[in-house]
Image (tube, rainbow, N blue to C red; front, side):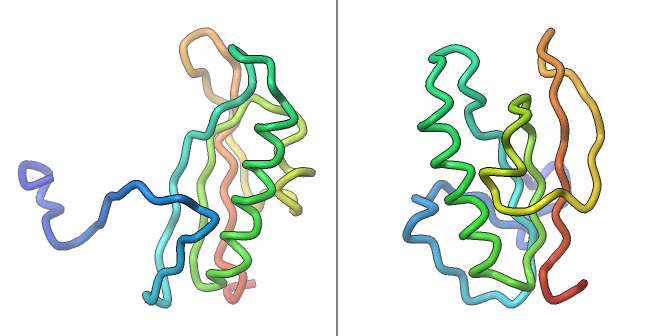
Length: 105
């Protein structure tokens, strides 16, 4: 991060989203969760997407960006994306789904 000039400006870490609680009022979550393409376990993926929606709702000043190829992502997340862009992850057609901070609507 030092080469990019981002030291002290962003935080990167791994944490279980079911127990994550951040004290900062504003920020942005970026994630590339499993799509269920390789393991064909959409039910587990949808449970994860639901958890991402709960995480977003529990941090209202935070935005969220998610890459997914699953057409059921938004339903499982609990809300339609504010913006979306089509992209490819390898040969797999995906979408980048952007969710604005809840308090910013």
